[in-house]
Image (cartoon, rainbow, N blue to C red; front, side, top):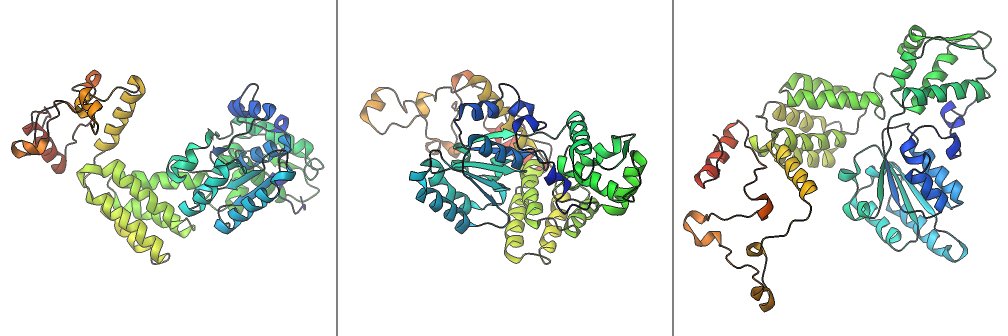
Length: 426
């Protein structure tokens, strides 16, 4: 166990046949396996929690297809690094039989300018982009880049996957197979691993390293727990505890408990969490959980994000705390969140319904002859700037997606709608 290369790196698979997990992507007839076997590689983004094989999968794709492979980390790379790879790829284009692959780890950390720098090269086929992210790419990757890439979701590794990895490490790793390791129980080992292969191997190394080199190693729930308590940090900002604590933070604010919100925020700050991650989640919460009950909440959360971005830490903790308290003590409503969910469901079920003729624009004579804009009533021409007409497709006429919640602000909204004949209970 004195090997300076971490066990997780020593056990990194190099072929699809030794890759464990993500059968929905790499199993027989699965999308990525078919892509590799056909040789028709398109840009894609791998979205999933840490330690589930995103980087490994990108490397295997490049190796199996014998493509030039460039790897950047969004943590320490910028526009200059991206452009250098693009220019190098263009310069070598005449000497290459296939497009090179640019792998960007943690692509969600790239800002808009950095992501924009990739667009041209992806569009003109200079390179194939493979991105890896632990954050929802819908929020973190710019729309033009997202539209040119497939998104594949990777899942936490199952107990059966972790069992295979454990057995393989004990039998094949040069540092472990010389040791006598007795596996009595795996529940704690797998629970602390949390579906993360890297964490599994790290824990295994920690446990084994606590035994003398000539002593047999015993792995059971008590041994694992005792040794981890002495050797592991209780907050891993790239692991499961990261997700557990942000979940507790959000739920504390949603539950209107400012004290708990401050405690969980302090845990994150103390552990070195990215303050912009916290501020970003406050912005999401302000619209999802407070919404129309207090529209100022989103403005304050947006201002908080801007303030933290401008002033950094440690002073950034103050606007973060102020905003968390404000949101926790604000009236709550998820009516907008629920309403857009219903509208999206309706679109999913009904497809592309035609825009009613009276709502269509009619800039040409032909359009007017076809009935475009006919019978449209301009609201400002009527008393109190309101006219009763249908704005939904005829198939959805009268459908109600938005239901005002029970709070002072939305009670006023309901009364407003009621005045115009839209039947809402107040």
